[in-house]
Image (cartoon, rainbow, N blue to C red; front, side):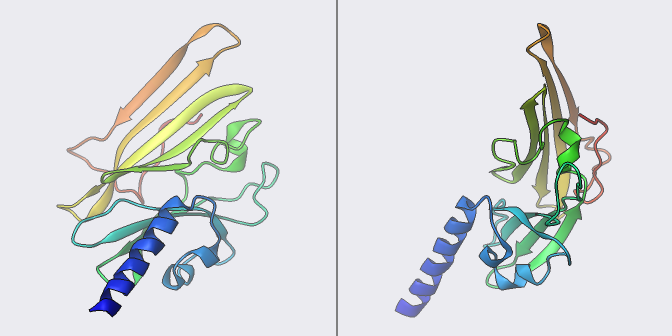
Amino acid sequence: MAFKKRVALRRVSASLMLALTFQATAADLPKDVQAQLPKGFEVMQSRTGPQLGDRRESLLVVVHQATDTREQPSPRPLLIFERQGEGDFKLIARNDTVVLRADQGGQCDPFEDADEGLAVKGLYFTVENAVACGSHWSDFVTFRYDANASRWLFSSEILTSSFPLEGKPDKTSVTRANKASPVSFADWRSEHSP
């Protein structure tokens, strides 16, 4: 019995450490996740994702190529892994466009300059792309876990532009999911470009 408690405590500690890890390396991730990362990519950011119930965990991982700069931008796939109970993590979904590239922010990197990059609350997570150098804008895209369908769906996109030097009012555009025609995480593409 004491052994099971120690194992459970280690898992909780590992999950807590991962939740606090934003800038991670592949070595910081479970071995089964490391094995599923795309070839030629390295971890840019990772975070424990929403808890899915029935002791199921999710893990969000953003990867990019080592040469990723504004001059040589690489795709930044966001990968969603899920673990069922005590089993291994499995890659469930991938989106290559929701995390903006280094050159899509003008003078600044829109993902690295954002406050968190990835934020999690309940069954939702948000990808935060934002810049505050030259132009000011933020593009927050939120997805949710649909337990009935057992899949990740687009929830909303909030694009805000600010014009502090021009004295113009802020402009906000909100796109919400169409419940009659849900869009999966893997299929989502922005209708806006910052």
